[in-house]
Image (cartoon, rainbow, N blue to C red; front, top):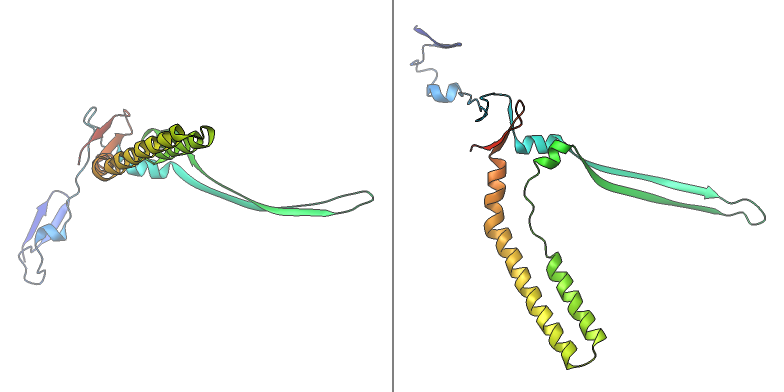
Length: 172
């Protein structure tokens, strides 16, 4: 039996037929990520920093009350509150957002107001114009979310934060 020492590891008979695995599969070598600015290894992926600093909150409860006087009555109900709490660091390293269709909806609603306010052919033409602009905005949003956003999101997932100097850097 042959023992070979490599760093802090001791490999026992690495050519032994009982292992039936390459040495690379037995020992997973850890890659240490170092900051490009200060060379510290105290780093974290932005995704981890964001997830640790973000909490989703849900609070619910019931409310009841009673009246006093000549006409006594009772009232009650339930209330729910949903929200998100974030640390400053989590909001700083947040992932890129997908674009929404909010602008397109606003333009379309403005077109309907034009039809209601201007009861003529001009109002209808303005509605058609607003509908065309709204369709163009929806197209631009869908194109961005399909072609641009995935690259931005992957870049974010491959970015790191140095906990020593605060540097944010990209290293896949």
